[in-house]
Image (cartoon, rainbow, N blue to C red; front, side, top):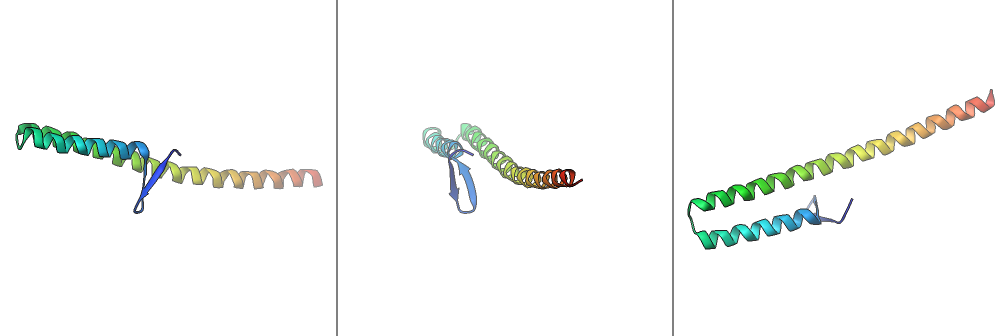
Amino acid sequence: MGNVATIGKVKFDVGSIVIIVVTFVLFVVSVFLTGLKKELLLEIGVFLVSVKLIQQSYKITVKEEALQAKLTEMSALLERIESRVARAGTQS
C-alpha cells in the first residue's frame, strides 16, 4: 500500500488526509463568506459526501488487507500440499 498515516487505530492514506483537510478548510471558508444562509446547507452536504466517500475507501482498504492475508495463507497451504504430493510421487 502507499503512504499510510495512523491516527489512533485508524489508518489513512495521504490522499484521504489531504482531501479531509482541503474539504474542511473550504467548508470553514464558505461558512465565513456566506454566513448562515441557504448555501451553507449545500456546503454541509458536500462535506458529508466527502466524509462518506473516505469512510467507504477506508472500509474497502481494511477488507482488501484481510483478503490479502487470506490469499497469502492459502498460497502457503497450497505450496505445502504440492510439496507433499511431489514427495509422495518420488517415493512411489
